[in-house]
Image 1 (cartoon, helix red, strand yellow):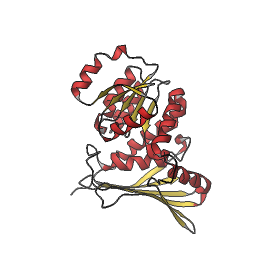
Image 2 (cartoon, helix red, strand yellow):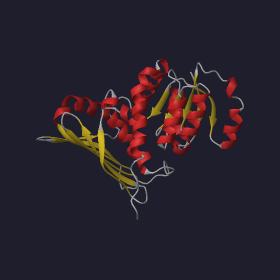
Image 3 (spheres, rainbow, N blue to C red):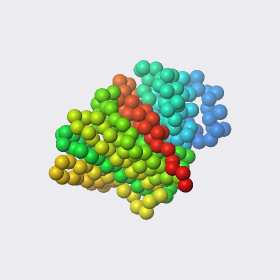
Image 4 (cartoon, rainbow, N blue to C red):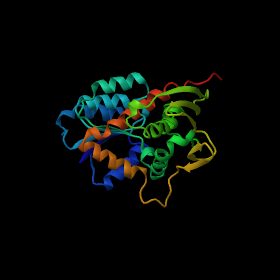
Length: 278
């Protein structure tokens, strides 16, 4: 298996190293407009059967590269978010062929810690009345081309949507949504229609003093907190399981149908969170 890597920042370098260790070879690494323009001239000489595109460029360029590689018949692994506007999502879904693999890198849903939480949620969902997703990071230069909603909060939206299958059966209302004028923090509240009403709150902050990732659940008579930061005691991290899921999707794109739907819905929901005036 070989790959075309678009973007060689922090995530691009991380994917490059990890996939090399898994035996993937790289035809080329494209990290500038000049690289891209040169590469496009040779696109027709590259095999579609054993080559995938790995897109780890800035988020505001994802849709451009996804559309290009879809139109040229390549399977794709794209870092989250899939796009930054619902119109881009619709354009992508219109171009994508049924058999093509389009995999979105929402690695958090594959975390062993989140998977443990997911099992508990499925077992106890009829007694859960409220959930709270909390994610905060210290300042970083990564992801600043998009607001926090499409940088951090979109991860937790995707993780939440992964709890429901088929996703088409999920119905919810947005009851509160706000983003700071600096676009560095955001809050979202959903009212989910189940056998009972489930309130789900999301809070994301990328200018915090510490890293925090957790999900809190509130049942009728008790509450519980699930830490989601990587635990060194687990045998494998999120990326390990994410690559497993991607390679399975390469064999059968139908296995990726619900995860792609969740990634699309995460962007469409995050986009509805508008910043407040200063």
